Image 1 (cartoon, protein in one colour):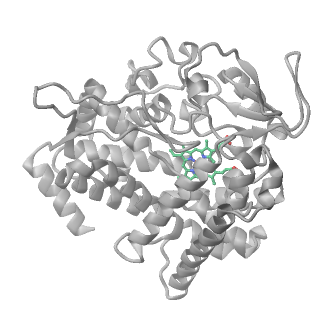
Image 2 (tube, rainbow, N blue to C red):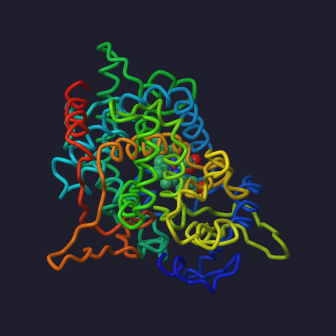
Length: 450
Ligand code: HEM
């Protein structure tokens, strides 16, 4: 992955030989749109990656091939998110954002962990309708991280010898143990949700809609258990945003100014404010663009021979979208594409958001993928980030830490912890200061009132 991210020698479409497996890497937005959006009928399959398939029993939507199981799971997820998103997110996102701000102010040294915890909490609420203090919370968050880390590492092309020598899959392995363990966990959480429903708890969640509408989509029990699990595959975007806040303080100043003008200092921000904060919306887009957490997306596979501009991409070729390179392309994002600059998405005349580069749809970037397999949870992710960023900035100032010599402690900007398909920043220290005593008191009261 590092090779793909750092080699500017690459042309728009590059062929690699992965130990006999043909791979094409797509390096420009135009080619990605041509192949992954316009030719979605033959580019929506996933490579058969043996270890992740064994780890998830072929039931994890993002990894499932372009087949009937995927169609059922995708349709159920999309419908559920479409009908429920706005309602079932609001309360959880509001509550977790205030809790996040409070945890960060009370215990700034561990801000990195608090961010991860807040994301896990919101996603578990969205997925299973459970709030943090109840219901084996710590245990489930730990399982959540183990699951996500395990599969994203395993899904990296070439991560395991068995991908090169498939006969090795016949050997009983830790991958199968992983599947058995996590199947049990997902079944138990799912059944917990079913029991709560029977007892009259009608919190909206993905699991609830699958329980109520499962028959409509023809889902098997196992498919339903694993369906909800797909939402757990989320995002270190908030961690990367924290880095940007320290490195690009003028963007933080502009965000503070917008929040103070629109929300004021006498109440906490709400979900409803988010629509009136174009600079924060641009900041969310820019955080996801500047350092995409999945720099090479999720691999696809050509399900037919594809003829494209005089080239043949043979059936079964693995196709990788080099999202990192697309986001560094000056033709799409200007000469400062490598910098964090939310204003690139703002029309300075009207102060409103302006359309992003052609082919990036309403997101203005391609971190959420393409075509038929574009991330169905992207609206959940975006609204969660908007609420977290707005609340944290309403409450505090984020700065770098000075060392004893009065110099800024260095931040490893280009380093990352490579979790396989997903990357996150190397932890760094941050100085977090409440913007006023009143702001701190209001955040404390906000958590009491929840
Ligand atoms: C910043 C956060 C997120 C990022 C960057 C992200 C990114 C992605 C990407 C790149 C894909 C594959 C797209 C492709 O192949 O072109 C994907 C698929 C998927 N995502 Fe997300 N995602 C995020 C959050 C979420 C959330 C919150 C949910 C659920 C509520 C979700 C549910 C899914 C599902 C179910 C798929 C599989 C879709 C399919 O294969 O048809 N994601 N995501």
